[in-house]
Image (cartoon, rainbow, N blue to C red; front, side, top):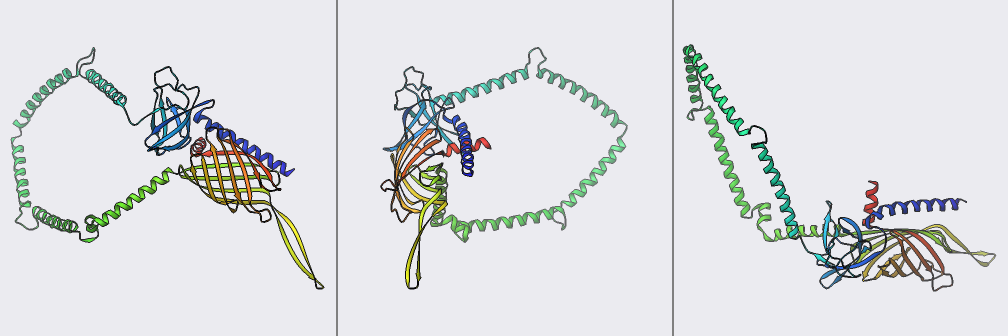
Length: 456
C-alpha cells in the first residue's frame, strides 16, 4: 500500500512538472505541423539547436541541426506550416537582451509562390539601405517637431509675437533707467561731503592692498604666492625626471612599457583570459529526468546532465537508482570436527544508486561515448533521427560479476515538446534479459530559461 501511495505521488509530481514545462515551452515555437528549410551562414557563433526562428518578432519555429559545410555553417530548421514562407524571403541573425542571445528573423518576401520543403533561404550578412532610410525618416520627424515648436515660439497664431514683447520690455526698461538716473542725480546733489568721505576710505584701502602685494617684503601675500609657485616648479621638474626614467625603461613601470617581451606576455595573458571567457559563454547544457519500471528490479529513475563546450563535444554526468539491485553471493566456510563445509547465501540490495561519468563526441548523426556507465567502465554509441526526435543506442558495461558484460539496447522518442518516452532491453545477449519502460523530460538551455523566467 505504501509503494502504491509513493508511486501515485511521484506520478502526480511528474504530471505537474510536465504541465508547467509544456505551458512555458508552448510559447516558444507554437504547435502544429512543420516544414523544414535550410540556410547557409558564414559565422554560427552563439547559435545552437532549438535557437528560435521568428517571423514579425513572433516565434514560428526553431533550429534542428547545425553542421559544417565547407567554410560555412549549414543550418536546418523547421517553421510552422501555417506560416507561409515564400520564394525570395530573407533571413537575418539578430540579438536580443543584455546578454546578446541570438535568434533568426525571417523577412517574408512579397510573392505568392511558397518555398518548397528543404529549400534554401538567403541569409542577410548585415544592415541594408532600408535601415538607413528608416533612421533618416526618424531624424526628419524630429527636425519637423523642432521647427514647429520654434515657429510657435517666435510667432504663435492669434497672439503677440514674443520678439515684439521683448522690444516693448526693453523700451520700458530704458524709461525706468532714465527715471533712476534722475533720482540718482538728485541724491548726489545734496550728499557731496559723504561721497568724498567714501572716496578717501577707498584710497586708504587701495594703499593697504598695494602694501600687502609687495613682493619685496617678507610675509606678504604675494611673497607667499611666489614661494608656492617655486615649489610647484620643483615638483614639475621631479615629475619630468620620473617620466624620463620611465621612457628609458627604468623601474617596474618603465620595463612594462618599454620591454617588448613583457608587453607581449601581458597581451598573451589578456588574450588567454578573453578565450576562456568566450569558451564559458559558448557552453550549452541539457538536463534529462526519467522514471519508469524494470521487469526484474521494479521502479527505476535516472537523471543526467550533458555539458556541451562545443556543438560536437559533450561531457555527461548521470545518477541512476532502482528499487532492487543486483543479487550478491556470500560464501562462508566452516570446519566442525575436522569436516569442512561451505555455505553460500544470496542477498539483494534495495534502493541502490549508480553513477555515470562519460566523455562523448558527435559526428553528424552518430554519437560515440565512453567512461563510467552505472558505476562500471563501458562504451556506447547512439544514432539520432533529428527530424523525428528519435534516438537508438547500444551500451556495453558490466556491474554484475556472475552475468558478465551487460549489452543494453535502448530507444528514445520525443512524444511532445520536452516530453519523451524510453524503452530498453537489458542483457540482450543473455538468458536473464529484462526490459525497462520509462518516461520523462528533457530540457535545453532555452527550455530552462523559459521555466525559470516563469517563476522569477
